[in-house]
Image (tube, rainbow, N blue to C red; front, top):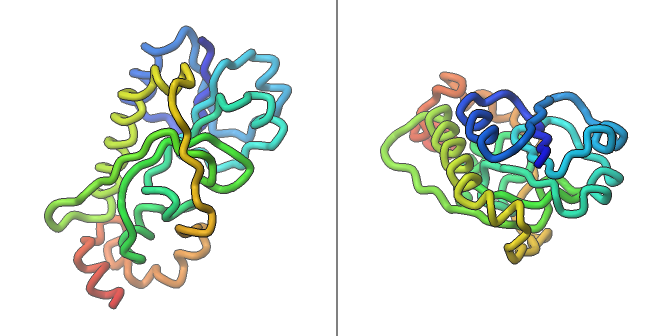
Length: 190
């Protein structure tokens, strides 16, 4: 199996992924259909990838492109989902979904709600969510790759979508950047 991993290098994730495949190619660059065809990728995994995948690639790969997203979809689609889950007090968790033409709107393969304990920082909550999504991925990888799951269609009239620029008006809350304690963030939000 030849896998294309779209996203930043994550040592533990990449090492484990190597064990699941005959070949892994990783990039953070924008990809084109010719690139997919030339390299004969069997499966595409997007995880922290910053580019929109074209409709022609989505159609060509036929449900063999997934995204690992650190929110409990349909809430907090798009950028900085961890931040928004606390600002808007929505469910927190992780979701693996098929990629479609929308932003984090594809059918859900599997998701997990995550509860946080104690007063942690935004960075610590991000690290917890990252660990949770990676564990969920490897737990379900065989099911995902084989297509032996029943996808759940998202209700696109529910949830939320955020872009990077949306966070600007809340930057004053990040008194310690990503090391801001969540309790302080919530207190200042009121």
